[in-house]
Image: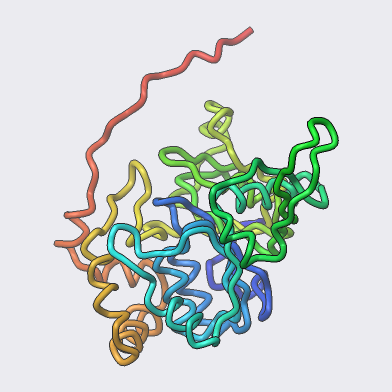
Length: 300
């Protein structure tokens, strides 16, 4: 049975109301298209987990999809606050749970390893410990010093955007790598969105770049430009103008509704969204080729 589905089918089949959803990606490869499809399908009461929540989580909260966020650092990168999430937290309308970046990654590693917790060295962020009862201190049985422990984080579904994969879901990622590998192994289900589906021989030609193996992937969705307004290394650039624009849009519930009506509910899919951006914007986001040197893996 083929794993290749439309994004609409993948979200409908694998994302349920009340799920703990982790949309991975650090700076780039952020799965905005999947987030927009979750909004279109009116998913509710989601627990949204992510290191550095990006604008997509602000949009999901604004659309009424979330009841809780689990995060490490939250903001509109390079601009300021995520206004909708911050406002919802301050009003008591959104539950929240905060960790350091390393704390989030350690939680995913614990889940991927099947462990009840993992230890960390103490950090200077003692306020996190005071405000999060799930961060605990225990005595290291070897040295006697105190270490921090965090529990596993096993999402019901992880959504990961990649540059390319084969029909089985063996996926290549490059550029800035975040927590994609850790969350894919920690999650119960994995949805891949990809810029392109390539022949298996291309994936096998560079096995060290395969961070996500197909045997843990449930759905593969061919969705070019799925990461806009973030970027996909080698495919298109970051739309910095939109990050600035969202800061203004998110000041007003009316402006947010107008944005969602036009750019999420007003388009059927990512291709229609990309065409709506227009040729001028598409041209601004184009990148020039910069190929890596070939690697000799040898043969025998």
